[in-house]
Length: 346
Ligand SMILES: [Zn+2]
Image 1 (tube, helix red, strand yellow):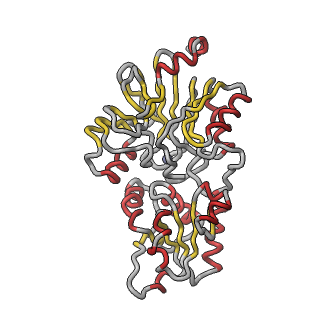
Image 2 (cartoon, rainbow, N blue to C red):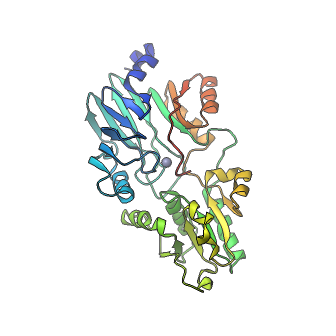
Image 3 (cartoon, rainbow, N blue to C red):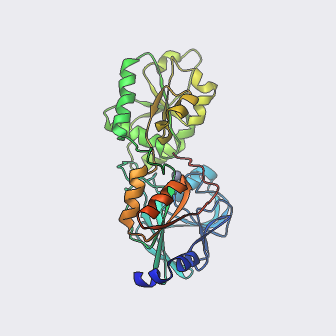
């Protein structure tokens, strides 16, 4: 089976899946994966807005991803929807597709596409470290592994997330009169920070910006215990209510006047980009927390080895370094130069 694919690896793989302006296209299956423009049939890896867009004819995704899309875009976000249970192989046109967990955010999946003895895995966004808000990434043996490269440079090595949360809690203890404002993306990162706080023993209410309310309630409805969440609503003259509080909101909220109403606010930001001090400084972040929902360099390279893929396609991020690493490791690799993926959940 695999021997056949080795004779014409590139030819065969490209016939099964190749980039088009709309996204990755599968001609024998008649579908796109994570298309950035409206198409007839879309397979969606996860709910981040750069991967999951409204306006497709039909969408196949995990139950959670479909629910998240409905929460964000309204129930009529697609002509029709079908839930893909993880690990179940579904026939689609002339090919077989199977969704496997990706460990990125709730509902995130890799999509394995199989046809004529060739298996390609499109992993979407993924990470390898433990995250109690979603199912862990599952390595899938394949001929071609399609990987992101958001943090595809050796300089990116994420520290343990517990260590980062401990720094936040230490600051909360040191500055009891301040409100700690934590910027975190609304889907995934925010809920992961909440869980990490709970796991570290923080049992006081966590205050949240309105933009996080629906998604956090959805996580809770799926059995992910985020503890008591309270709206971070500011009454006139009520600054004192937030002394010592942890307030979580989308990063954009902390750039506007909303954040200045909290008492002696300390700006924090949970993102893999906080590894770059310059970036933290530019954003005015006082307490950068290096917490990422993407793989770091070691996770990317280890995962490529684990899949046993003889060929790797790199979709978005720092493609060149990872392509070069593959070549040095004797693995054929190429960048796909897909556009439209903005790392919503970095
Ligand atoms: Zn994502």
